Image (tube, rainbow, N blue to C red):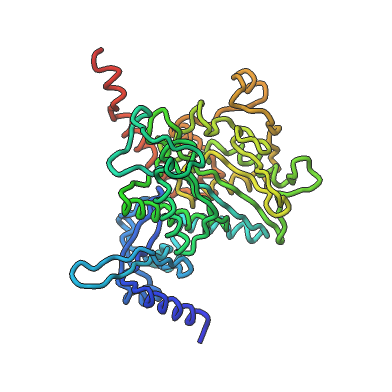
Length: 453
């Protein structure tokens, strides 16, 4: 019996032991929405062999209607059994559901070049050929609102929960624990969870891994958080800023690079413990940050978070342990293994596969072309005047989606080389349509301001 056959036997034994009746075949569209097709478990063996056909033209960014036939092939290593059984309504008993992430293929049997997961895989395969191994971790924040009680501005917020709050002050703790418990049962290694700085905002941290695995886990975490929250009368919201004049949700990204098993970002002889490779990576990231931001902060609402007056980074600068900079080098008791950089601008509306691709491509361009970063900043940038920032060459991050989309269009390293021309073209068009739709809408604020002019 081959290893593959044994793996299949073990999987089907596990599915039977947990009374799994349905399998969700999962994948992500270009704009970052998790998609699913559901099959009975008895069809799964056949799908593992031949895949399952679908209409690619109905998935954003995948195919046009003249060549729409595509096929999903499950990645068995990603199979997770949902830990909440469903009661049968027509007879006694219950059943479980499992989910597995799939890769879209063309009818010719080749991976779809428009699939965000494949785009990230392709980039990492290129890096691996050069002996480079990347790792990534993220810290997703999200809101937990009681169903039907989502405030629109600070005056409607009644909760007093704050950073590291504990019950009874932390009214979301029980839901957050249930989310974490579900993820642990599914084999996703959660490290910690806590209440964030403002009411309703929560954060999860999970073990770093290769970027594809981290992106896979993030998509499952968002799905599980939403599913568990609904079961408890709450709504999990990953929109960056749903409440006006209020803190927003970020998703700090941690990146490290290893060569031949050694941390390529670490140099014990450097004052900051950083290698020249790490500095070049930072230089490349800063060089391309305006285009990268179109992927790490891809919605109009993202830029309601990236404003002065809150803790979100709005200045293009880097430093060691400095939380006022866009990029920082976190302190660690084990610098030889854990020296890494943290990009603080991403938010949880990002498609993680494309966001990681953009971040890594920018950094790799810095390494390839020896792009030196500006001087590290040690002061609190939030306390600097505009004149002081100008003297140190600190420029602002883009303040709108339109600015970042324009930057993406003109940045060939990120658009054509990393994402691919067709994917970039689709993203740019989709985002410009989103901007146009927003510009044509009339908001409550406008009505309040101008109704009586």
